[in-house]
Amino acid sequence: MENWIYPALQGLAFWIGHRRSIYPHYNLGESAFVAELCNLIQAHLDSTHRLKCEVRFSEFLKGNDRPSILTERARADIVIDRLRKKGGKGKRTLVAEAVVELKRSQCSAAVIDKDLQRLAAVKESNPTLSAYLVVIGEASRPRRFVSENGTALGSFFRIKGTK
Image (cartoon, rainbow, N blue to C red; front, side):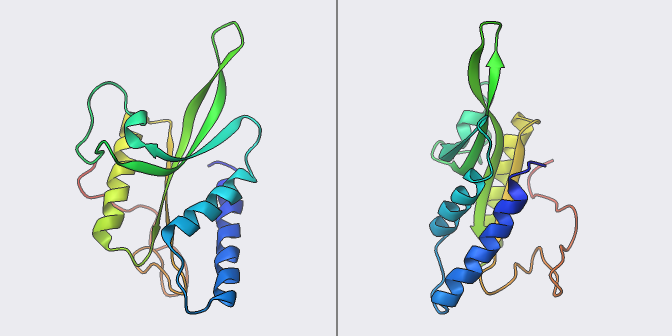
C-alpha cells in the first residue's frame, strides 16, 4: 500500500474534527473533502509522483472495450501518477499508479456501489493500479463498513455486478 494514503486519511479525520468544531451544524460538501484530501496527499508525495483531479475513467482503459458503468463523462476524483523511464534515452512518462474515489457516508448504497463498480472496472483493465474508495462519515460512522466500536466490518466486500 502506498505510503501517502495513511497520513492523508489521518490528516483528513483531524481536519474534519477541526471544521466541525468551527461549524458544528454545517455539513461539508464532497468537493471540500476531495480538495482537502488532495492537499494532504500532495504533502506526502515525492518528486516522482503527480496528483491529478477529475480524470476521465476512460483514460485507464486499454483498447476500445469500455464497460457500460464507465460512461464518457465518468471521472475519478483523484489520480496519482508516477514518473517512469521509458526507453534508453532517459525519456520519462507518467503512468497511473492509483485512483481514489471519495463519497460521503450519507450517500445511498446505490451511489457508493456505482463508484465501487467503476473502480472495479478500472482495476480489471489495469491490474497493477491501486484503487481506493474513501467513505467519509461526518459526525456519524458509515454503518455499512464500520462497526459500533469503530472497527471495519470485514476485510472484503462483494461488489455487485463485478468479479
